[in-house]
Length: 102
Image: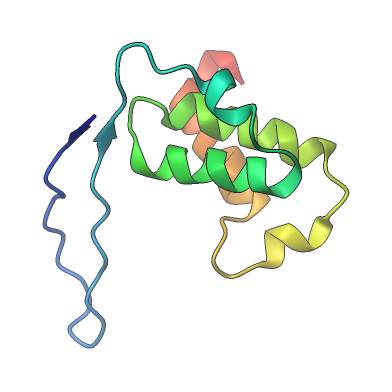
């Protein structure tokens, strides 16, 4: 796996912004095989983690996480402050997939 240097984006002076490196997955990376060890909300968290750390996997993982959220009955998930809301997830998926693939 390659890790790109994070971009330096200036943040507020009082609170330094955490920089997240972009991880490039190996060419033979199999999302299904990786996710086979996870179920339920842990599966959603893993998908969102991968989407947030890899530009190459962002669209696919965000879409899959949204699909998993739709199957879930835990509406409190979207209220967790450390997790993106379902509206953010939808916007992210739509942005990644483009106008014609919504």
